Image (cartoon, rainbow, N blue to C red; front, side, top):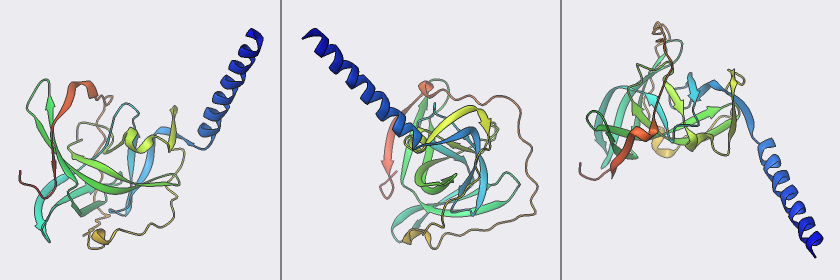
Length: 212
């Protein structure tokens, strides 16, 4: 009886390992930095793929909130790695108030954007933040990476964006996109990007359309 139990346990372990290997085989391997296409901007951005970050964020400037058909929207600018600039308008999904252990609380607007990594396309909730002190203007966190990618920290720029043309949502057809290809890219700042998720916590979540 003991030998039968050991046999069944061994079979179960082999089954679990095989299943995990099969799932891993279905995921593409990417480097820790990749080119990612931002659908609403119409250009590629250099992105850090960070399994230590819960969510994704993009460097956005000149944020302007406004009301459109009774909903809260935001207008903002993003810049590609080669200096292209796009002005985008998107509905506000939610607003998060981030409380840091040291310093004032930070208000972050979250919008939904279409992101293409390799041949993987996904609409993702993205924080609009100031990332001027970081090397990369776009960060993909676990919310995008889980189920889609395996990250090899020894690799960079392994797979250019190659998604099929994506159909925009109805509320995205009127997004304003202004590309200025002659802009000169800002030099990348030196230093290793560090972000400690344990140093912040979400104090309050507000849905768009509600008072704030």
